[in-house]
Length: 500
Ligand code: NAD
Image (tube, rainbow, N blue to C red; front, top):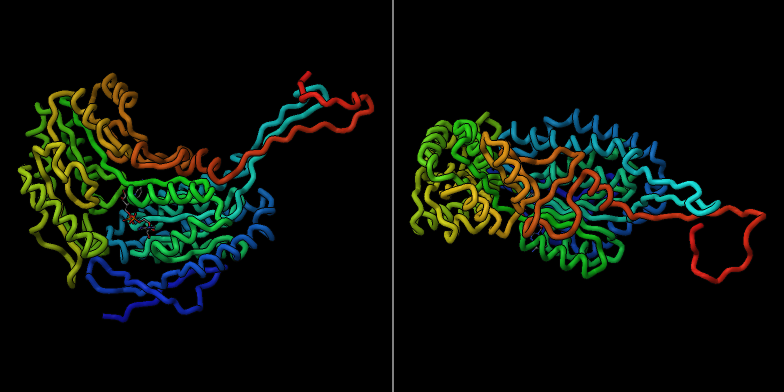
């Protein structure tokens, strides 16, 4: 066993050289070993780095031309593409998800970097010549200053990439606070900006926990906060950040439903349930955790899912397995506790993930996939976001009952319908109270030029991530009304300006 490596902040283009008052452990979830010791930022350090970022924004980046900003974006995109395998390996080593899946998340993040390359077009304003006689009116969007991005453990590359390229392309300086559970991939991606030509200090990574988050939420020079994490923390971040005058988008947790109608292709639906239920060991905000099956096809569907589950290989994500471990031992135990609770509450435990073989060395944080049938809406395996490989089948009598169940849920991140009836799918996309909807697509994560975000308890704030909403979130609008001196001006007039 090698000794844990020190993981520290990235400030003004270089690793921090100070001594941290507090640290935390980072694990390799596949072996259970401590692989890193992470420096946690103090409130004072946050203050110093906000000042560094503000200066970099004022002195350089805030005034850099669109042409130069887009050159940096294109270069960053190339570097991320070049290093995507290295970054995927870092994700697997600290998060545990299998390499293919880790590469998938980098690739989806890369799409946002590509979107940000179009910043000159995205920031084009409007111009109205002669809006009033000899008066021209035009609009522009300007950067905010220093913005903070606070990310969760489950997508250490992709979630920061939802925000950082757009924030930078819009001319802001960024303080990025990764999850303390798996920070290395986030830091590695952020380090590429220097090589891409971004001036030092425009992006900084500060590792930390509640102390660092609170310092960011209350600092007067942090103008906006993009947060992704669990619902209680998202709500807290939104309430605290907005109370301190900041613009906040706080994306929270989820309980995503997949409704299967009797006319669906059941093999397609069973494959989708496996992929969306157990991919990344269920640690995805868009994972399907509630499969809502219309009663007449439920037996057949459950049988098909059970068959497929038997073929899954669980183990070290670097060994070509289908599913890796959970992120920490504590989280694995919490998820196993839900399996226990579901069985006790009377749901049918079709496949019990607590027993099984794992292809890994050491004492990793493994838990196999679990399938429950005949789950009811009052059971904790249905009401709570488990964030693990536990799929619950809830049986309903009809489309209407399924829709009612989904709309009654307090979360509204993603959902999917499986059907061959275009009319039913169309009704569903119209009637369901969820922000991202899939039709025969189980994980409907929007492409980068649309915006990502849920409804209800899955998002606090008005703006979704990336796409046009991201550009709008990271800029402030300004409208200029101009008239150049004209010898025929009308002299003094104290009345309110009227257009003629
Ligand atoms: P988390 O809420 O525990 O942590 C998220 C971030 O908040 C981390 O950076 C963490 O350091 C910080 N944090 C944690 N507790 C805090 C506190 N008390 N005060 C201030 N800051 C605090 O979430 P997680 O476990 O890292 O991530 C999983 C959660 O994120 C799940 O609920 C998942 O659904 C959600 N998620 C949502 C989306 C989405 O798009 N809606 C995407 C990914 C993950």
